Image (cartoon, rainbow, N blue to C red; front, side, top):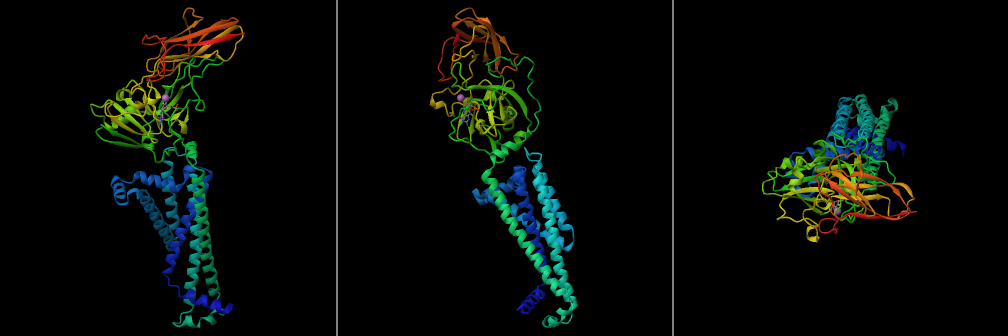
Length: 550
Ligand SMILES: Nc1nc2c(c(=O)[nH]1)N[C@H]1C(S)=C(S)[C@@H](COP(=O)(O)O)O[C@H]1N2
Ligand SMILES: [Mo]
């Protein structure tokens, strides 16, 4: 049985045409490339999710594909245009890998060089992407190393097999040698070596192919399932800001119970109409400037960030904030002026509003002038207090416009800005009982003492915050038990768009007291006593609080 078998295989192998080795070499190249990608996927899973060469190169190609090719793909394949693009990339990779295998067999180490070159190109695509982490290139480096080693080993086995076949052919020169090959087997070791090297190549290739398929798909599936956006957000590293907010000494008062100058992201109020927090991938996000513009503009996240980021200190306020309420917060935002983006599109005369649109369908109407004014720091924000925007606060991009309530300006997950008119377009809240335009009203708030917390008699501090965005707070005054208004001490202001902290010293006496607060802005307006409800354009009136001293 053994002899018969050996005779069979020998017959088969000696009939293998030479050209078949090129085919095997191409397969070895493809299999090694698959191993490269599989290893890179696994490493990416562990080290740097943004380091997947498959996704990074895919995104890179989508970015650089010329417009005519994109249009061709969309026209020809419609909604499947992305699949077409990715399929083209895949085909190119297969062809290049096959070529590398053939080259490696023909002219060592050209195939390895080609693999190395592909790795370098992939790494270039990865590290030049916005927000690439320092480790993003690691998966491709290790993957390329593994691919190079495997290509070397597999093609070496293939070359040995080929050499065995050649040696055998040389040893049996008679034209009918193949039919009388058996006696030669005893004399030469070549036939056995042919069998061994052939098996070693085929088994090695099969094992690598199977392992790559299992490991690679497994890693991608795990990555997709456990993904991804949280990881992407965590590993997003934004370029250094061109300018940062200067927080001078005295900008933050050290008083028990006072609101911190900057609200932490965790404590920042959240208001939106979204049932589930939208999950927007910065890699696929884009911003369109449409409507009454000279030329529509579409920006990717990378385009936006490439415009350069500056840091802004801005206090945001919700129209639903009651007097003394907590729907107000201050953050340091990293962003790009909206006016710079609008200028690229060229708003046309006659427009007086921008309608910002969110992925979740939410819309806000903002006066065009508020987002084009050189003196107002209206921004597309990408970061909040030193980290990428939290998902609840609009990741990856939101608007922040000083001096306007959030519902008419602070669109989260923003994807489109339509330049239009108040006459032609209506925002989400307009038919729901809120004004189409809504500047923030000056306000002041008492943070301490609190109505629900007794204090002891003796020296105490009454303290809080006050805001009059775009104008600035000139003075805060406190009246105790309807006494004279006394000026509070203010923290050193950051800018007109950021609230100030204030305090007055007070000697608390046992009993109950009424404390009232009001602010005066830098334009000389005094906060009015008269109360207004939150609808249709924001609450107003002085806050009065009851203090119990024991
Ligand atoms: N997409 C979207 N953006 C939105 C809203 C919304 O409902 N959907 N609400 C707005 C309102 S009313 C306010 S006050 C601010 C609140 O922003 P914050 O949740 O980050 O504090 O977001 C604004 N942006
Ligand atoms: Mo709001």
